[in-house]
Image 1 (cartoon, rainbow, N blue to C red):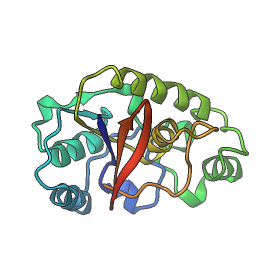
Image 2: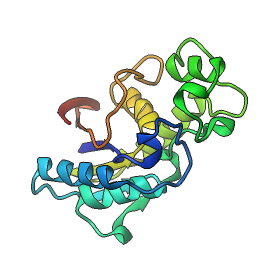
Image 3: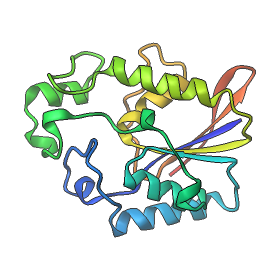
Image 4: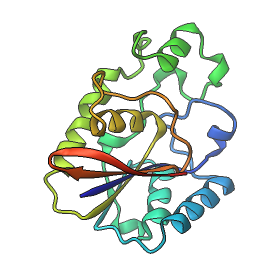
Length: 191
């Protein structure tokens, strides 16, 4: 199985450098163009299944890159973006020290009160990927978010902490992993 993992295209909150989290914001024109360009880069690939976070920015990205109808997208809450709680829609630079340290260095600093923890994100992404592994797909697309992709990468790349924080995923970047003898290998990185 090849798992194609992509981050959604740009939104107004991304462009405004604000914490987006669970806010259900659509793609802006740049985001739509990013998704179309990503689809062009991958050519005529057909996906056996297309999964998405339930948030509209991820669903629309999945629709475009997956080249499928919205009704054919499998929405899964386990790959929704991190819950930023009281920091939702705040400027990246106006979150205060506790949130800035956590989101910059989660391997060193705990989640502030009301913010989803790394352990919670590890558990839900692991649950999603374990279930995905039971499917008989040749190619599957997973469209989600920059925060949660760090945990998907952690699982697929066998990271000790359970996540890979850097580099930050770019909008509509696609990482392709192939399952070989029970392990995953990064076979392509499409930016």
